[in-house]
Length: 94
Image 1 (tube, one colour):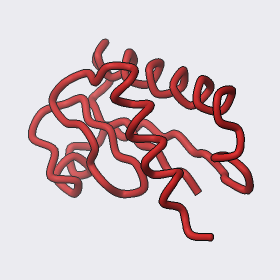
Image 2 (cartoon, one colour):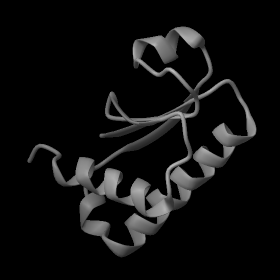
Image 3 (cartoon, helix red, strand yellow):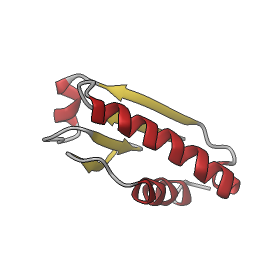
Image 4 (tube, one colour):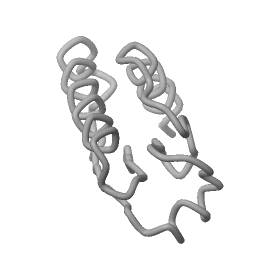
């Protein structure tokens, strides 16, 4: 399971983050399909401030992968998102 959450109130940067994450998943799936074998990918956008606090996010947007806050308060680069996704996929239990 690859559970991805974008945290943010619905601002432009939040939607940009969603697009970056979606593109990164597609690119990584094309480049390294073996990482996605038997993996379900979910992407949610959480806009409730209680969710921000639960992940200890002080400034939006935020990116959470498998319940771990990966980036907060800024837009990550495409390569940064790719690396984070690959780390989480490579560490999946066998």
